[in-house]
Length: 115
Image 1 (cartoon, rainbow, N blue to C red):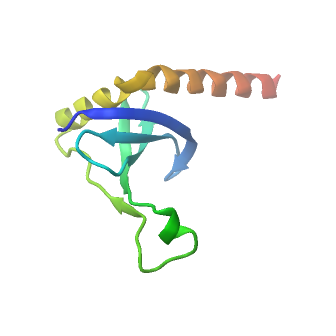
Image 2: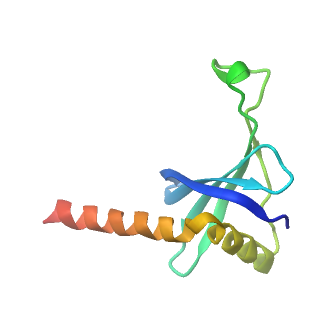
């Protein structure tokens, strides 16, 4: 498992009908970032989708069938290694605090809407 060089929260989204945080992460020794969808399962964070971002503005500004901008990447398959991988990602650049801040804002918005 290579260490993460940097990570940043992009936005909240949905993946297979569950709320996810979309994160961009750079891994040591690799040029293209990972696009990681992180979900909270009630007890811990887990990576539900990991893509390598090969997007290139010169090639991908239109619907280009000859270039695949995102490639599916396999997150560590071993349960413990996968947990450690996500924890290492969350520890990068204060990412976990940012995700918890987003969750708090979402809860506040839901409370304010209902009354």
